[in-house]
Image 1 (spheres, one colour):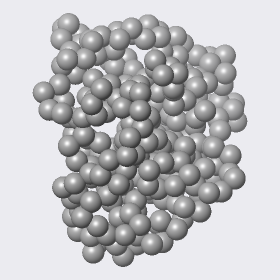
Image 2 (cartoon, helix red, strand yellow):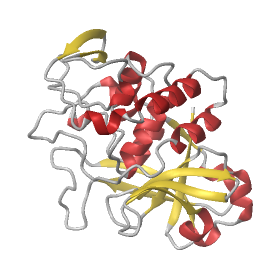
Image 3 (cartoon, helix red, strand yellow):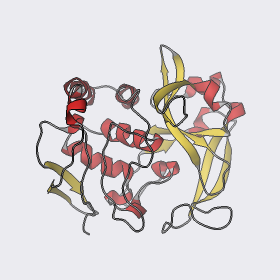
Length: 285
């Protein structure tokens, strides 16, 4: 199987130096092969380079620490606070070849989780990170639009290589949960949200917003991945983020598209989630 990558967009935080090309490990269905990606594009290097060394040192320190996974997620995600929210950063469709994109300077709610989880699995910021980003974002290590994990619940399902990103712990947090079967990607009118992608039958567990209380908070762990459940037909969640319980109390760390934010922020957890249809909770494994 041929890996479908035309170019890779990275930020300086992933670099050990400036070059016209970068060497990455890219993964196809069976083999990890080292390739050199040409046509490497770097924009506004001077702007980003000013804080490159500090961020890189902090990340390397976190990745090489013996912290538990949930604490590592807390520390990594903190480095992304105030990063601008920008939608549609990934490249690829059922008509356009998929490209592996890593851009820490512009995030949406899902790529934010992609990068945090890929870094959580990594020991370094180069080859190890690129391999783990592929494994986090795509099913079966296949960089292809139709293999992309488009739905949050894809994270808890094992692919044919035996990989998954997280465990669904929703029902372990409270007895007040609900379970519903959904046909993901199928619109109310029978159309598709994502052309070319088949309808996926999926069972979703969630905690209704009205049932989110201090008992649920007590059972959550720092670094738990949170999906905001939706009643919309064909979708599992409409937003994602990370549960953090720090000095400011429990917060929902998320790449927010609200006009007052448009960046990665910490939002009071109960205040935000109790007004929503519910939450889905996954824990890194």
